[in-house]
Image (cartoon, rainbow over the protein chains, first blue to last red):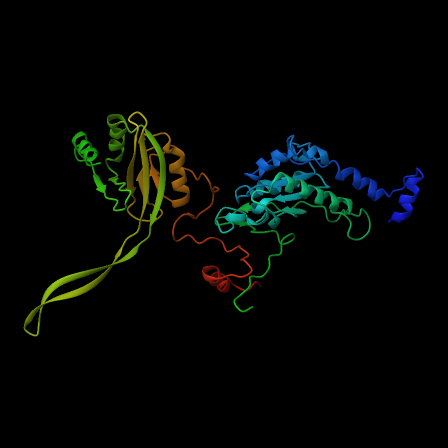
Length: 206
Length: 203
């Protein structure tokens, strides 16, 4: 990476020096196109964040696309039921890389108040990788904007080459995530072990 | 309420209607309908009594339970006649129940509560559908079918409505066991702790 002091000194003299990583990430972090879908009440807050008062356009994420083929950000806004989960995973698979996921609200993160219910997925991170989780029930639009800024910071810090590079820059890692199937009692499989490793349950005295 | 029962019996001879008291402060009594005449009674209530709106259909699961009864009988003990108390335990079979809440928009009154019971809780548990009488019952009967497993004979489109096709359980029944796919809270206690301790070690 560039020496920041040198970069700043050069800038003062009218010379802008940057790296390819930096300018590429700067471009894409400021034009995230979210997929236009909402699952429950969090979607109302997402709509409010996109509308005039909170105005997500200030952060370059106002172009909600109704097609996954044109979107690069999936905002899971609301309760993911087990009946809906395979469709959400399929939509995520249909999005082109680079793609990111924000889990918005308690339900999308863990199932929230419905965690011990029979038809709510206990967190979308069981099937797809989540980049930013925004707690709240529902989170206010400011919280969604904060989550978006956090995601932008994450994108700005991604490397394009070398070890630990971004998923889309790693040809071996970009793949479809298995879509769960409806089983007799639950989704099959109940989670994708490649993205989700549950904590072993704690026992009394452990 | 009792005049409704009388009106039904006058209009439909042989109608199987039983009044069920609610001893609570609400005093919201209900009518238990027999399967054979339920449809005719419902049509009479709609057309003859003005109950034009079926507000909701609920399911209730009554599992089999043990009832203790104390019987007092006279017995001769040591040549003296005495009253002997005897406790008898018997098992009351479980059943499923569909509850309909009717309102009268024209008469500005309600609710009138109807109940129908299945003979048992097995897979064949069925009651007659009232969707042909009140169209608004269609989705709600499907929901009761989905979550309780009550079959509604005569329903035009009896499919699961919330859970997916191929799901086998009835989640709102008392004996439903949810799949154990939950990471429990960091400090489990009471019922949750029991479930955590009962859980198998991951291989």
